[in-house]
Amino acid sequence: MRIKRLEIAGFKSFADRVVLDFQQGVTGVVGPNGCGKSNIVDAIRWCMGEQSAKNLRGKAMEDVIFAGSESRKPLGMAEVSLVFSTEDGRAPAKYLDFAEIQLTRRLYRDGESEYLLNKTPCRLLDITELFMDTGVGTRAYSIIEQGKIGQILHSRPEERRLLIEEAAGVTRYKARKQLALKKIESTRQNLLRLNDLIGEIR
Ligand code: ATP
Image (cartoon, rainbow, N blue to C red):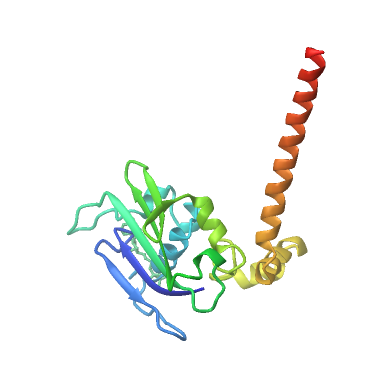
């Protein structure tokens, strides 16, 4: 899945709505120190469901909302939308009929937040599932920041294996297996209870 467009409003240094269109090929973002280049990557990561404020270079999640400047008051909400094209056929089957997938995340200062997939409210789980095995996603390999290459090279074989599994398209099946095992275990517990009850009734 290729990122086609990024829309940012009220997020970190982007008080006003900014739309970035990513063309085919390589896009470079240049600007003086502190102008907000890294905030663009933070916006992408946040929109895809990042849960750690630390990974977004903040102390609390609220820090992503525009905090005000000399000339502007702080804002009450941050909103980021990412638009993906599905042309490469790597999107999950249920999204292949759509020419693009729009993902939106909003956070209000009172802590309320929401995710939307193609403008319909959804759960974080839906987003995690959407990105599984695509290489996109907060823990995948689509965002390689400073120090990440070294981190991968020095990571334990088990950790490196997770990246290879994501690239090979195995992550989705491993997650489903975990879910199935959980269901089997809970059914086993129900059966035990049922047998106990039958025993008592007899
Ligand atoms: P460098 O080239 O030094 O790495 P950069 O272009 O990547 O810089 P960023 O780190 O993206 O810059 O942006 C830093 C700027 O974003 C700082 O001026 C900081 O005050 C501003 N900023 C971060 N969070 C907020 C916020 N919640 N509200 C307003 N401004 C913010």
